[in-house]
Structure formats: C-alpha cells, structure tokens
Image 1 (cartoon, helix red, strand yellow):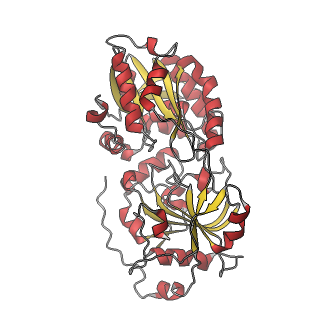
Image 2 (cartoon, one colour):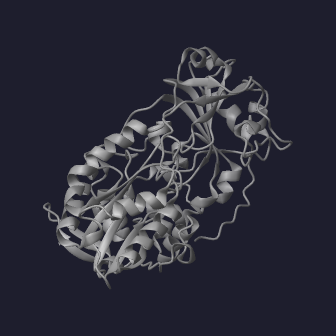
Image 3 (tube, helix red, strand yellow):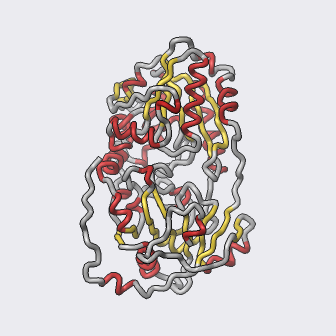
Length: 444
C-alpha cells in the first residue's frame, strides 16, 4: 500500500470558514426503521444440513482438494460460515483451502487480498484451513463472444471449487445475475486480469458478460456447488443454501429476488442532504451501497431516494484506505482525506472502468463545516428547515437520524418510529461528531 503524506493546509486564510460558520444546522432525532428481522439462529446446524442434501456432500470424496472462495465484502458471520464449510468438507474427507476471490481489490496484490480476508476474521487459525493467495490466473475457456475467461491459478488446479457468495442487487447494473455466485466466478475468481476482461466493455454490458463468463466457468471448471448467502435488512444471515452446480443458473435469479425483497431502504422519497458517517468496501463495493443511498456511479442501475447533496465523514478501518465511493460525495472531511490510500483504490477503479468513485470531492476541515457547506450549496430548498437524513453506514440503516423537516412524514409512516426527541448535533471542541459511539444516538 502507498505511504501517505498529508501535510496540506486547508482554508489557510479562513475564507471558507467565514462563509460557512453562521450557516444554521437543524435539530435531529433518532428514528427506527422497521424491517423483516428474520434470520438464522444456528449457522453450524444449517450448514451441516446443506452439506447433507442430495447432490451436495456426495460430490466431495476422500483426499479431494477443495478451494473455497472468500470475497472482500463484510458478510455477516463470514468467519463462522467459512469455518463451517471447512469443517464439513473435512468431515467428508476433503482437503479444503481458502482462495481470496475479489477481482482487483486489496490493491490487486496477493498480500493485499490475503490481508482483506484475514481482516474479515477468516484467518487460518480460526477456520483451520490454509489461505492460498495469488494474483496469477490461468485461462479456462472462451466465452461465446470470444473473450478469454481466466480464474485464480490455485483454484484452477483444485479437484473441486465451492463458490461462496452473497446474493444481492448490484450497485452499478441490473440483470439476471447481479452480485452473487455468477459474479463471484466471473469477477472474484478472475482476479485483476479476469475482472478487467469482464469489465472491458463497461457496465452497460456487465449483465451480459457476467452471465457468459459464469456459464463458461461452469462448463469448464470443476465447480462442485455454490453456497449462496442472503442477508436481511439488518445485514444478518437470513438464508444459506447449497446449490448444485447445474442448478445455479436457474436458482440464483430466484435468490436475487428474495434478496431484493429483504433489502433495507431509506423511508423518504426526497432528501436535501444525506450524511454518511463512514463508507468502506466492507459495507459495499461502492463504499456506500447505492441501492440504499441512490449514489449510483453508472446509469445502468437506479432506485432509491432523490438526494441533492451527499456528505461523507470518514472511512471504515476495514476498507484499508480504499475510499472508492468517496467520489460520489459532494463533501468529505480532512479526516477522511488523511486516510486515503490511492494504491488501494486506483487498481479497483481502473479494473472496473468506473473512475468517478475515486475522485476527490470538496474537502472541509471538520464535520460541522462539511454539513454547513451542504446546506449552503443546496438550491431550491428552505435552508432554515433542510431535509437531512444521517446514517452510520449503508449496511446499518435500521437506526437513522432525521431533521425536523421530516417530522410529519415519520409520524405518518407505519414503518418509522421516533426513538428520541429532536436535539442539536453534538460536536466536540474541534467541530467533529463522535463516529465511534456504540450508541448511535450519542452522535446526534
């Protein structure tokens, strides 16, 4: 990763501060959004049940080497899920190992990808299996369009591959297969080289290419089965399903619709300013999931609220400096800027051909100034009563905070409930919010 030198001085003459210091900010209240909270209580038992299904466990034979894909996303219970896959593979006589399957993430280096996997809690000691990280790929076939299809070299020589992936709507395109098992095969296992080939025509062709690449891999690589994960609106494990190799093409679109129905949403149509405390690759490939925030980086996906200004305050530790998604914001903080690692983000942006996410927005010295700048620059609104929604991150929107202008809409909605009274933002002496508080309301 790159060494970061952040000696820049912002607003040397205090001009920006002078322009913004008197911009009033509204009072905010904590609001609960009600979603379906159904989830699995006993993951080890469920995983054993899935391995014991017909057409699943009997594909693993004694002595067989089995590669298990692990991506870069912060799936709920991912260390335990991988540990239980490993345990069941060993129970059936297989020899499992972990393959980081995340395209160009981790700075497109083997060390970076291993670090991400371990940062998710998937360590060799915990899951009891070796991690074999490489950026080397080998060709395994040609797509119907004549494109070379490549996968991780370690996975390619395994006797079998278990494709583990979360199924959910993608952030940059719509199609039969979005985020899920097909994408894990086409992009994740493809590493930087394979992902670049798949992305080469841009996101307008991504649905087509993911399907073609995925089918080519299914036909030419010893995929044993997929393990599909679907999460609920609280990012809890709602469903685990082992899908036989031959059933993946038909089953994944059904699971995608299930995921779409369980997905969290922000319960307001029109928002003047959306404040996101933290973004990161552990929350979404885009840093903040556009399916939640509507901060889409391509025209090939849509949906969600209408937002005039975005303010992003910080990066998660788990994103390792990769601020992909910050470019979709209008304002960020000096705190966030100081954490940027361009070596982590640029290979990711270049590979996927979408560069807007790594642009650097307006940088403000403090959280207070970033919020004031957003209010100052909004047009066509009542600046005394801006419609502000603040979220901790795009993975956790069950508790959000809203400004007084949204009071009546909260009261009129069956899916929204006030958890606190309205009160001013609570800034420290430097003008920043407490983004680490376990009690989200403490940051209001």
